Image (cartoon, rainbow, N blue to C red; front, side, top):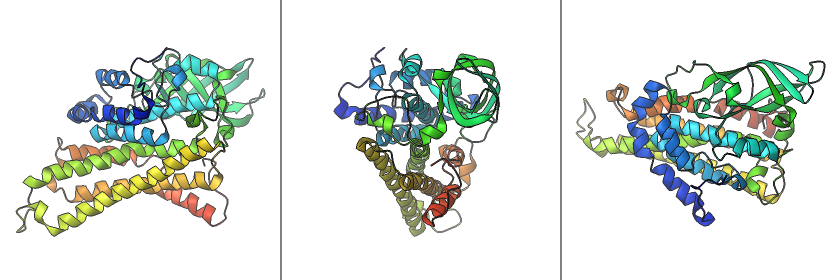
Length: 402
């Protein structure tokens, strides 16, 4: 089914999608308290985002999707984050999980997921617990439990990490299974101070059969062995797995950092510095120094992200899978950029006075959401620094997720 909201002029697709995302910013900012209160994105907002085609960024063109490159992915989702961090977390994770289906799985599975033109996939790579049996034609998950199922409240499919076992129950690989959400129970356990509206609840599965065609090897995928079968011209689906999974998570922090600077500057003309002679904070030298520092950190983060995005796209277009050292460097770019985003937000918070703790202060919500977004395990700066440093020093990596 062809999505009637697809952009037909491919030369303007990126600009049009970013424009569509930007149009949601005022609405999402106005809905901020509601989103936190109900702990989800309002359904009418989800439908509006869907109607605008903002959940179809990575869906293949043959299924009516936009099939954007990684830089456009970042730009669109970071625009949404300027409006609300939780909303961007949902669109970011949904779009990258759609990309997982389109990249890792064969066409018949893609037809199941994308065929109705309304695919929204959530995903968790690693289970907390998974009891699984090999049976004829596939696997039976007797019991499975996964944490942090971001976007699950609005999803119709889930991509869930499972152990791949042999006939005797021995684990022989790590896999990823695509499961319809009708077979998944969403646990109501997402009670947080940040990203409250992302609906990152735990997911539970009991006694379901997963056909073999809907299970792929994650270890093979990490090394570029994909089953999707797209030609080398369909470059999005030849992008390196872990670099994509890491880098796209920068979309929300980048947008929230930009939003924090906008909010701070908008309030600046009417603020003074309490208990000083400065009747205008905008005239104080310390303000100039802090604002410039925050702005440069945001710009520096964007430069790292764009370098990584362009490298992912370039390697995919070359017909070669991104080499090991460059994949590790993209993880480092992601970790360094997320640190810069948080540092920029923290600088602006420190200059915002006691009003920062007001419940209706937009900057306070940005800080709460950004703290959650910047703590994701794949982009934690210290973890990525250690990994990259080990590789530069000729040591073995401490993870397979490269």
